[in-house]
Length: 338
Image 1 (tube, rainbow, N blue to C red):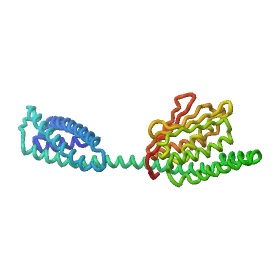
Image 2: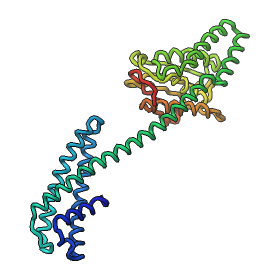
Image 3: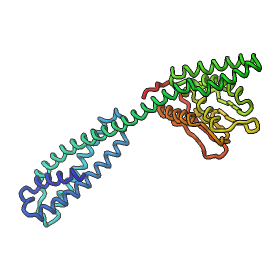
Image 4: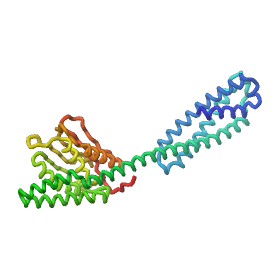
């Protein structure tokens, strides 16, 4: 506005007053100030109209319609402001001015051309800024996706989980061969699922729950009654989709941060909550010493992964006794392409 309005004012006064515009410094300054203030009001009005049309026609396909309507409204608005300005000049005796139709026509033509040019210029600037914003968002999501892939590879060969599983298997072989065989079978299912979790960006809730059932068998062998895992998911939600290993990451994070013992078991509930929401709740009984940094990174990575789908994960830590994580389920297949 501060750049364009003085130019508008100068050109208009040159056309309207001719050589009289430069007759004296006072005349030049007064006419310029009046025109400048008036064109600032016109500029603000057109800006407000542009914002209204931007909100009314936000889609890419609506750009031609939006620009056409904006130009028409701008030309009408500018004509009204210009006519009012000429009347203001005529009503002030100091200017000694009479309305000149020829000057009005040339002024309106010049301002109309500049209005059209500025409309396209501002639209170009706006689209460039949106492109820059989208580019930054794409770069951020690309980084999150690469981090997601790295964390996924780490989870596939988690040495702590592998060591604990093999240790439990070793103990079971000595104590109960039948249980050891069952444990080995469930362990193979768990690792088979982990090793193929990057094949597809999404799996059905039913598939994830089958994995959790095998995973629960390994955890029960390790923690016994210190861990209680309850599942109550509606059939309608089982056909929906989520990122693979979502539940495993959250369960691991829960027992990494909380103590488990038979007298004070860690209780984890997985249940349907509302429409298309999977809720995972666990009681809070924090460890005195915890090495849960890797598990926190896995949870952060999971949150970033869901941002790729524009489905934010909700974590409720308002209660001192329970933590609730809400996973938004996805209704249809989509590709994980940043």
